[in-house]
Length: 113
Image 1: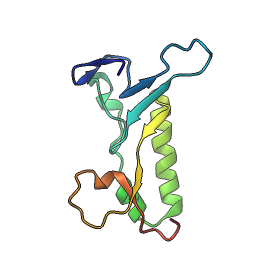
Image 2: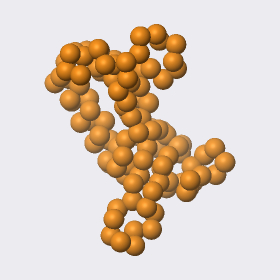
Image 3: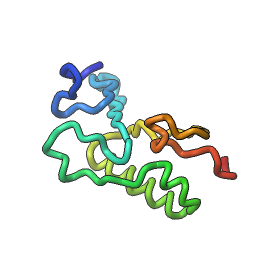
Image 4: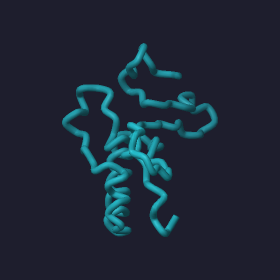
C-alpha cells in the first residue's frame, strides 16, 4: 500500500491510506489500528497516545454506559490524530482463548447480540 517503507509507515501516513488524491472532493480514508489505542508508528506521538482497556475488557463490564464512554473517548482520540477509520474492534464469539488477538474482540456473549 501507499506510505510504507518495508515494515514501517512513512511519516504522515496511517496503517491504511486510500484516496490520497482527492481529485473528486472525496476525503481520504486514514485507517489506523486499534489494539488498545492508536497504533504508534512514530516516536513523536508516543507520549500522546492513551493505553485504553482492551475491547474484551470493555465488553465484559456489561455496562452499556461505560462502554459507550470508552468508545466515544477512543473515537475522539483517533479523530484528533487524523484517523477517520478505526480498524477494530471486531465482533467474534471465541470460546477458547488461544488466539493472540482475542482481547481485541467484543465477545458475542452479550444478550444484545
